[in-house]
Amino acid sequence: MNERMTMTTATAALPDRQPDTQTVTAVRHWTDQLFSFRVTRPASLRFRSGEFVMIGLPGDPDPKTGRAKPLLRAYSIASPSWDDELEFYSIKVPDGPLTSRLQNIEVGDQIILRPKPVGTLVHDALLPGKRLWFFATGTGIAPFASLIREPQTYEDYDQVILTHTCRDVADLAYGRELVEALEDDPLIGELVDDKLLYYPTTTRESSARMGRVTDRLRSGEIFTDLGIMPISPQTDRAMVCGSMGLNTDLKAILEGFGLREGANSDPAEYVVEKAFVG
Ligand code: A2P
Figure 1: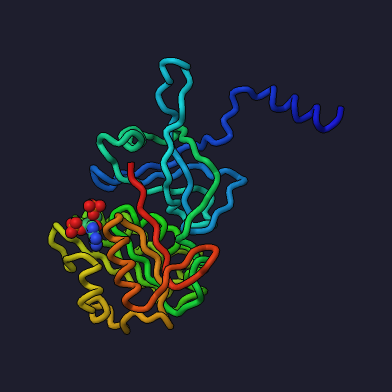
Figure 2: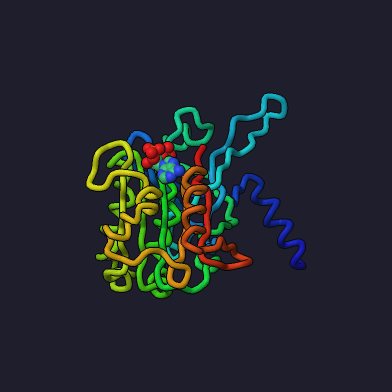
């Protein structure tokens, strides 16, 4: 039997095989609007911390053809590249076609995952520097949840600053817990040491630090609060992930400090990606 025949036989024997399906291994609801979940990782999936993939659920069958088109959205992988499983962090949009259903997933359920990781929030898109800033609003923290658990982040930089702006204190819990767990992490706890600074702010509910991170950058308050020098193109690199508004405002602020936008093909001083919802 030649190779071609073997392959044909194997494919024909598995007519219902769904190569892009993964099993849910954990689900955690953080608030009535936010949840995270973990799924099995396809053995063949390699990705760089900070990248995103398309995930989703089977859609409703088309009344005419009877075929179900998958309902897919781009989601940042929130787990680091070395993790055995994949983690995602999501908002629950009540009338969102995907998240209204995805929020009901349970351990053992199947989700669709297209194993083609892409994205600009990767180390390769930045030139070498001394300090790395992660600016997130809401679920925009997901790619940074991956990158703060990535050893390369601490090997390449002397200091790492994660800012997270949310409306309410409870919206910060996912990020806060990750940061707190890092020190004791057997794999990268030692590397992180005291390199990571965490700067959460809330804009609606009162907390220790109120206001948008953008205002605190413009006023210089953030540098005073953290006891560090202002942003400079010689030393600082930045990644931004949030709403269109945050991304536009931060681009202007970072350009004002003299940083230029980079890309995988043309590394520079900062990179931006929109946080995905739906
Ligand atoms: P604010 O409450 O002042 O709008 P959302 O829940 O709407 O996605 O927003 C998440 C967080 O991002 C909120 O705290 C919100 O602040 C903040 N935010 C929204 N737009 C901007 C922006 N242009 N710059 C900084 N923070 C922003």
